[in-house]
Length: 209
Image (cartoon, rainbow, N blue to C red; front, top):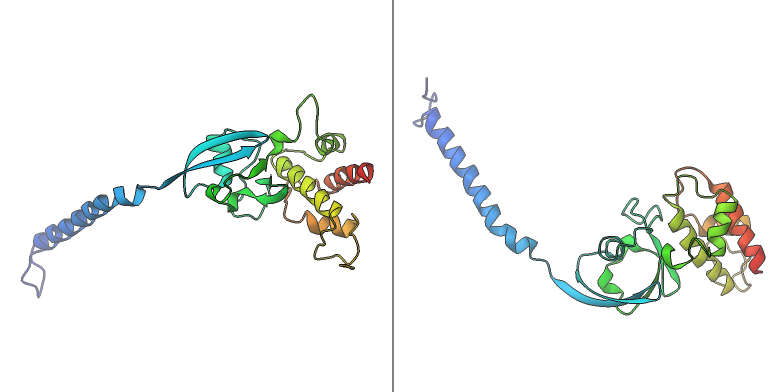
């Protein structure tokens, strides 16, 4: 029963040849593995929340993973990891960015502010206090990104940076409902606390005006 009809090879010969090919493929892949995993590292110095850090990082490491895994600043959250939810928002030299989309080695000497650097339990940042007062956090997972993004957004308004919905590019934009929705659209709240978040941000904007 070992003979294959119309073939000079027996079924046993075919199975042995197939097993040999599979084993050779596995060995070849194992030989390549060390070269593939031999990551390049780079020494990086940056200021995080007012403190200088010098770290050796894999050049493929994102700023988000550096903050969370090496500096243990876990307030910045990993959500979609594709720059679509805003949970990883931090301030880089005063501008809000999605830290999951930026390689850490792209920020040498940069000044990074995370949610931990905005305030403390004893002395909350005005936006942190407003989120508490207006119940703008609910599950809290997106809250650090929401607050950091709001800080950056209010700074944009202060410096007259227009958005897609700004009607008059020559005039200083005001925090209208349309402006707020447009500027915070990159920060998703899966709990749907958008009205409370908007109230929190608006209350701080009015006090700062």
